[in-house]
Image (tube, rainbow, N blue to C red; front, side, top):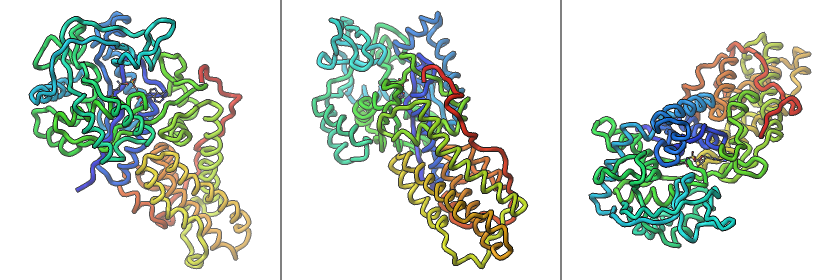
Amino acid sequence: MEQTYYLTTPIYYVNAAPHMGTAYTTTAADILARWHRMDGRDVNFLTGLDEHGQKVAESAEEHGMTPQEWVDTIAPTFQETWKGLDISNDDFIRTTEERHVKGVQAFLQRLYDKGYLYKARYEGWYCVHEETYYTESEVVELDGVKVCPECKRPLRYDNEGEENWFFKLSEFGDKLLAYYEEHPDFICPETRRNEVVAFVKRGLKDLSISRTTFDWGIPLPFDEGHVTYVWFDALINYITAIGYGSDDPEKQAMFEHYWPADVHFVGKDIIRFHCTIWPAMLMAAGLPLPKKVFAHGFLLTKGEKMSKSKGNAVGPADLVRIFGVDAYRYYFLSDVQFGNDGSISMERMVQVYNADLANTWGNLCSRVLNMCGKYFDGQVPAFPDSQADAPNPLRDLAEGLYAEYSAAMDVIDYSGAADAVGKVCTLANHYVEDSAPWNLAKSEETADELAAVIYNALEAIRIMAMFYAPFMPNTSAEVFRRLSLGDIAGIDDVEAAARWGQLPAGNAVVKGDALFPRLKIEEISLEGF
Ligand code: MSP
């Protein structure tokens, strides 16, 4: 049976429009989804929106709308942004959807029936912006005001004087530690793993999972006056989207088919929710745990975390207008080592664009396709038998590409995967330079050599286009069109497709316009980046 690959992004809050930070996670997940599809897996790629909670309710009020009206206004901006970035998600979940509400209630009922929920009085510090509770020791004091350790906004002291429902999270500390120990790859990268282990070792407290002070949330099935704490509701999206809690046997089969997830992508800010609360919830429900949670770092501009609320978030569409969607995707995932924080800037983006894309990949395609036009009337030359034993460094390197690239993708190392292709690309440019086809074309005696050089370069381009496709789907599709090859999106066995020598002789080759026209930093201005 085809191997499945289920991957998810966080579901984003709808209190603000998507920005480069949220686009970063989504693009990362998309690249991996595209890779696994090409590599023959049955991929399910989920993203979506977190639509409940006080923050959303407050934003709605500020805009003079009901919460539902507000989330319905914002949801399309996410869908459009993801479309604009060529995100190939298979599903899009919104937590106000019936399938989610029903699934959450089924999950809560299960925890209740198993005795993992109890009622008690709650009081403590709460940050509405982060939708997070903080203990006294976590709270930070600024000018005599208790503020959130994450966003530094003033905290609210919740002392509702009434009872809330609690989840017995404290019972899961040892089980979680044992699980991390037995599954060393569960939390990636390792620094995050160490951080979570240390956090759990300090002891977990039971978690308040319901509210009675507002009603924008999912009612507890066994105590209707309470709505579910937004994080408890949100985490469950990873299973409700694939049919958990559904009465439909087809949906139930889907859950069996895709769960457990192969990877949940998250930013480092929300690792505790995903690596402590979520696995404990699944353990309590008796469900398998996801195979991996990968926490990437923050994108920083001028040393600060990018976020809509800090006002330093240029929209992805602004950059796509300048660089094109492929270069956008390539820059963020190749230049920032996934897992670490990464500084991004316009200067650096232009530099990477010109170096890797305009001068290397784009340049290689233009000159080789151009020479094929000039020397072979725009048709792929047959590889001459006389050249079969000649050294072929390009072939050697291209043949190793699948192994190197897939090993990098296995550990979710985008820079490593992009570099593997980049190396072949640089070598191909040198190969063309060193072989000097313009000299070989001068004499009949070197006609076979000329045909071999052009064939090799075109074949290397065909192979590179496939490996660049998860990062840059449009330009790769365009390269395939220019080589009169089939639909690149249909490839589902890249290992076989990338074997050397499959470019058919005689295929029409079209030169076309520059794939990545060079950019000058002086000609670009974009406030805030
Ligand atoms: N709704 C919760 C997630 C629930 S998942 C069950 C949430 N939403 S959020 O809209 O605040 O999105 C947070 C996520 O956005 C981060 O974890 C990260 O994936 C992404 N990023 C937001 N700002 C970012 C940067 N500056 N840099 C990188 N990623 C960032 O938390």
